[in-house]
Image (cartoon, rainbow, N blue to C red; front, side, top):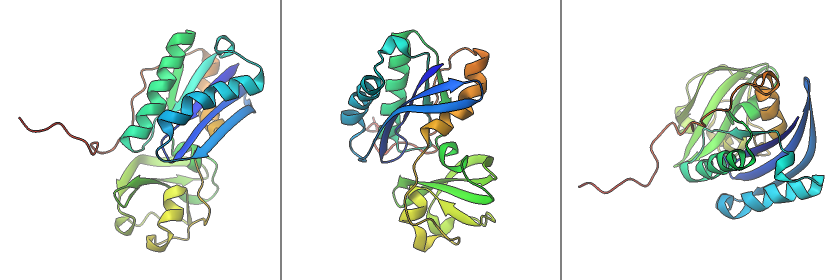
Length: 212
């Protein structure tokens, strides 16, 4: 099964083709650029590039997996709308996965996965040996409750390392698209019906309609 995986929940614009064979995943092609304002401009060419690299066409894709956040409104929306539109055009199912799970799902021990929520805040969740505890949250780094985490990982962790109460990885880590496909694999392999993608915004967008 060939899967197109997308994530735009962080400043990384990402697309990949992943082959799913029973319980194994194989990365076939991959594009990424760190560009917080480049989601609209870069994502569609990245999808085309991944297909070209693999010598494939949209009709060769069997399913789409999209990171559904949490993430800033504009960038996250680009990825999810693109995923839904591609799936609709190709006549294949689309599945959503929490983007933070693409970071925390690869950790060992007790880890805090955090991405940059802007407004000097982070989106975060705690993972025990790669399994998330509870729902993702948003807050200022200095207001993070005691999570018992041994270390922090992710773009938000590296950006606000000096404000967190736990050691943070120095290099930013972004959602792993292969991990997103792995997490969606039970639904994919079972032939589950495609989903209506529901974004995890966790807060209202910056732009609001003017009061009447």
